[in-house]
Structures are given as structure tokens and as C-alpha cells.
Amino acid sequence: MPSYTAPVRDMQFLLHDVLEVSQAGIPGYEELDRDTTGAILEEAAKLAENVLAPLNPVGDAQGCRLENGVVRTPDGFKAAFDQMREGGWTALDCDPEYGGQGLPYLMSTAVGEMFSAANMAFNMYQGLTHGAYNAIHAHGSEEQKATYLPKMVSCEWGGTMNLTEPHCGTDLGLIRTRAEPQDDGSYRITGNKIWISAGEHDMVENIVHLVLAKIPGGPEGVKGISLFIVPKFLVNEDGSLGARNAVSCGGLESKMGIHGNATCVMNYDGATGFLVGEAHKGMRAMFTMMNEARLGVGLQGYAQGVVAYENALGFAKERQQGRAVTGAQMPDAPADTIMVHPDVRRNLMDQKSITEGARAFVFWGASLIDQAHRSQDKQAEGLISLLTPVIKGFLTDKGFETCVLAQQTLGGSGFTREWGLEQFVRDARITMIYEGTNGVQSLDLVGRKLAADGGKPVMGFFEMVKSFIAENKGADADFDTQFLEPLKAASKDLQSAAMFFMQNGMKSPDEALSGSYDFMHLFGHVCLGFMWGRMALAARKGLEAGGDKAFLNAKIATGRYYMARQLPATSMHRARIESGAAPVMALDAESF
Image 1 (spheres, helix red, strand yellow):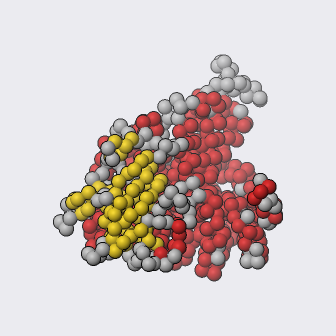
Image 2 (cartoon, rainbow, N blue to C red):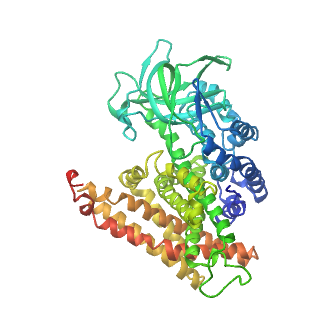
Image 3 (cartoon, rainbow, N blue to C red):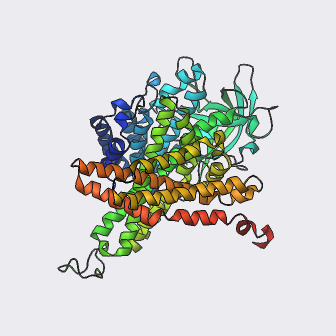
């Protein structure tokens, strides 16, 4: 059975030595001293390690089942959900006006990694609710906020997002669900939605569905989409639950992974719905959910890599197989542990350097969200908008890859259910697909985000990396050679690729879009290289101050590995991009 130990030490290093949250100047961050963040993370770790992680294989084995219209979650899920709710973990960064604790999003992100690593399927129930809360908080009326948010913050009520229909996924302009206006200001919602995570379950009293639908007579395509609140139970004026709405779960999907989460077919048969925001402006409101969801999925992706690496490392330190080529390291044992073999070390270092770099990237992204929201910083908002498809696409690709590497570390044992690695692989796979496939993320990055605001966000990123290199160059020759020079070369690859798109993309869009996936990965590698530069610098300062030598030296060594063995991939991605569209588009459809 797999285990999970939350990486509290590493999170504290990122918060206080790399991001230096207490001195960041972001409202609310001044309260995030080491003792405060340590107390929060330690308590979250207990819940993740002792409650959620043991339920992960249970949820995978049992799955959910539909009985007389009610979805039954796996054994132990409801009790664990009650414990999470009672501990206030669902309300960490929510508005205090509606019962939230008002902590920065960064702290919710750190806790979220623990919960996702421990039990991804379970954590999705409150994660979807949080996304729906955000959309209503940003776009709902005061009456809607007062009616729904307090119960959603506490997770007494759940929340969902309903986009996809049987005939359309990414192209939401094709949706057929309709919303017919009623005399009382409500709407009758009729249609079918599929792949609705947490669409029906037995852990909450009510579920608040956010549903995309079209009002008859509106504009064609996405310009005619509106967003509606469609609760499972209607809510009376005094806040109590009223009649059952005409919404039901028509079935559960049989899936490759995340068996513990209910992925539902939802049927709306003239259900009562309430317009959120303006008519025909639903996509704007829904993207409030989607952007948070994409960051959350990026976190899910690398979090599965984190727990997979932890278990692979534990196996490698115990498993005895063969002898070191340089001579027996355990002469009194029948064989050395597989840790002595260079290829196993390579495998583990790939996992370690990716997951620790990914954590730094996501924590930095969370701090940019706080900076944008708490300081009304438009530059930070532009930067995190640019980075969102990179976080979602690159980190889920790499998270899945890390799980496969971890599985490989175990050899044949990794292919068996007993050790749990195959579940991490299966669960991680969905992160590359939902909330917009990674191909769609790359198209969004190249087709929209690069040119956003006249290119200011991407130019700001280039300048940020350039300034980091200039400010720290010359202080230490090894740091220059091992970190700054590789980062500079990688950044030049990224700038050259962006220039290729600018020069060729307007006259021939295929030239840009054929290289978009490589560009997303190129960008992701530069971001992780930037993070490793910052982490190595913080570790060097820590050593000078007499900090934990073992931890800090390991951090620097892992960073050196990433810069030497992973970051050079940027030149490969640049070469692919600059090969243009011709190799990609050479065959017509009939020739495949």
C-alpha cells in the first residue's frame, strides 16, 4: 500500500526563503510568518497523511455507484469530508463575509497540493465547489451571494461546472442546452451535460450547478452563451431547502482513473435556473472558474508526481538488486540497493527536479494571483494569465511523465496494484485532458496570450529573467556557470521561438500553431529553470547563514541536475518550432 508524507519542509523553504512572503508587500502576506504557515501546513499534513491518503486506494477500488438517482461515494469518504469541512479547510482563502478565513490563495495552494497528492479524487469534490464559489463571488448578484456562498464556503453545499455536452467539448459555441425566460425572472433549463465532476453525491445537502446554456433569440456561437445557477434543491427565502429541482444524474462514467470522484451525466428537464451576470455573457463568468480550475489541474498533475516519486524513492532505498559497477556497497548483504545504479539515480533525479521545480512554479503563480487580486496589480494579472496555460499544460504533461518514471523505478512491482504506482499513473492521466486538453492550452498560449496587451506580459517575463541574471551575475563563478548561463541560453531559445511566430504566424497561422505545443514546453522549461535559479540562490544564502546543510546542499545539487539535464531541451523545442508547418501538414487527410 502506498504512503504519503507531506513536504512541509520544502514548502516552508519556498514560502520564506524563495518567495520571502512576509516581506513581499502583498496585503495579508505580512501575517504569514514561519510559525503561522508552519502551524497551518502541519495540521493540513496530518489530515492528508492520516485520513485522506489511506482512503485513496479504497476510492480507487470501490469507485462510486448510482442507486435510485443518488450517487454513493466510497466507504469513508463522507466521514473524511465532514472532518475536512469541520476543520475549516474548505474555507481557507474564501471571503470572511461569507464565512471564509480570508487567507491568501498561496496558502490554499500549498494545502491543496497535500490534499491532491494524498487523494486527488476526493479533493475534487471541494475543489469544484471552490471554483463555483469564485464564479458566483465574482459575477453573482448580492442576493445570489447571500443565498449560496455561506453554505458553499462551508461545503455544506457542493458546486459544479457544467460545460460539455455529448456533441461538443472545446467548441462551446455548439451547445444546445437552452434557457427559456419565465415571468418571475427565472429560466427553465433543458439539456444534457456530460463529464460533470462531482455532479451528484451523498456528502452534501445540496449541489449548486453552474450551467452554460443559450437563451432563445440570442447571438450565435459563444456570444450567445449565458451562465445559470441551477441548484439540486431550490432554496426558500429563509435559506432552507425547498423542492427538488428538475435536475438528475442520468449515469456515471466508467473511467481509467479518479474512480473515487463521481463523473456524471446530468439531465436538465425544465429545471429552474437563475441567470448569473448579464445575458449572453456567460463565457466571461465561466472563465473565472476555468482559470482557477486550470491552475488547480496543473497542481494536481505535479502533485501526483510528488506522491509517486516519494514511493519510488522509498522502494529504491530498500530494494536489493545487483551490485554497483564500482564495487559492492553492501558487502554483507546479498546485493546492493538499486540506489547504487546510475540509471536509477537518473530516473529519480528526473522525478525530483521536476516535482520540486513544479512546486516552486505553482507557488510563484499563486503569489501572482494574490498580487493581482489583493493589490489590483494589472502587471501581475497579465503575467499569471500568460502563465496559466503553461502551468496547466506543461506541469500535467510532466506530472504524468513523473508518475510513469516512478512506476518504472519499481520494475514489475510498479505494474501491480499492490504498490499503488499504477493508480497514480491512471489518476494523473486525466489532468492532461480535462479543463481544456493540453493541445488547447498550447493554442491558447500562442494564439491569444502571447499577443495579449500588445505583448507586454511576455516581454515583462523576458525582462524579469534578464534582470535576475544581471543582478546575480559575477557573485560566484559556479553559480554563473551552473545556473545563470544555462538560464540565459534557454531564455534566448524562448525569445527566438516567439520571434519566429511573430515573423511567420500572421501570414501563415499554421506556422505558429504547428509549433505551439513545443512552445508551451519550451516556456515551461524556462519557467522551471528560473525557479531553480531562485531556489539555488536562496539555498546559497541559507548555507551562508548557517542553515540546514543537508537540505540546502541537496536543493542546489538537484537544481544543477535540472539545469544540466532537463533545461537543454529548450534547444530541441526551438528547432522543432523553427522547422515550421511543412513537416506537420505535409500529408493530406487521406494519406494518413
